[in-house]
Length: 193
Image 1 (cartoon, one colour):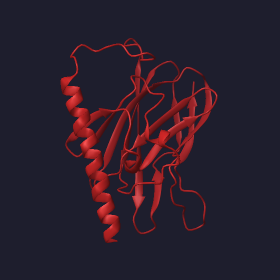
Image 2 (tube, rainbow, N blue to C red):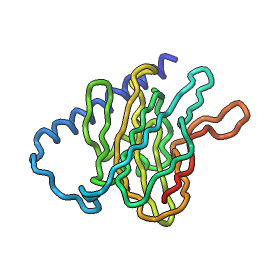
Image 3 (cartoon, rainbow, N blue to C red):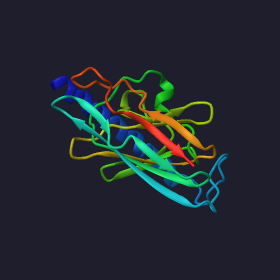
Image 4 (cartoon, rainbow, N blue to C red):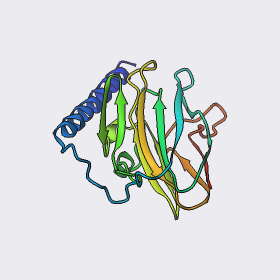
């Protein structure tokens, strides 16, 4: 138990360092925005989708609060994911800690009163991901652990879906399983159209 608390403290400290460095680089960046390849057009309509990840310390199970998403095509979809899980997961590959497939590249990370735009997290500081990988969409957003059960982390990022259909998404981090041995509810479908 002490080792887990120590590990959580080290993980949260490392994420805060990344946020501080990211905040410093934002403060020093030019104030005029530079167009980013693949960035959503400012004339696009915007819709918002909020998700949360819950954690039950008694069973050590994780769960996205919703598994079915519906989004319109050809609009900017702004996702906000709130993570109440203070644990870090096993990252299957270093690429799972890197933001990819979003508009503008970086995601906005909030931890307590701190926030910064980052394009990746340290491999040892990823709690979960929101990932899609198929013939049309290649999206990966790493999510840092909560500072505590009562102080969640939060990430915000944008995507434009241009191909209609129903696609799967999920967490690529090795998560636990429930008492029946079934995978936790860390996956779902998004219907685009």
